[in-house]
Length: 146
Image (cartoon, rainbow, N blue to C red; front, side, top):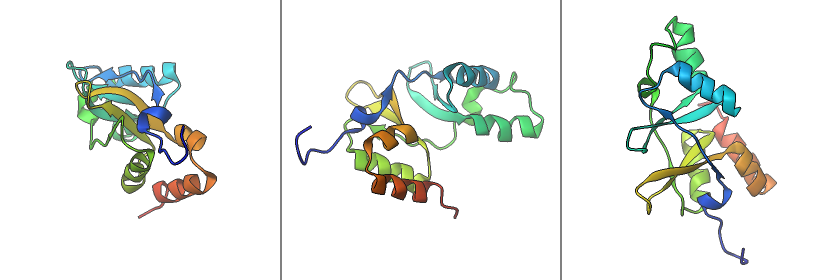
């Protein structure tokens, strides 16, 4: 990369993000997380567009702890508020979005290709690509209590 040139979201994201379909159950989402070794999966609609995100914590706190059945609840019920970044956005914009909303994973959307989900930026991706100073600032913002 040329000196002074800023990295784009697509350059630091991890590719190959798999979605749980919005009509699949939380049990399906939990199994997918287990099989992929991740703590979060995107929820996608039949149009292959991002509809939300579901975390392992969502399943535990909003389903299991409430005595609900993960086999009966559809992923679409857990979409929640959604934040994402354009694939060509500067990494500083991704960092700002994650810090502002205190999120640890950020979907990357290719707005030039029918708004398709093409990857995810996680804390590990940031750790590999940010200076120690920037990473410490991120951690301070994301893990700060209100």
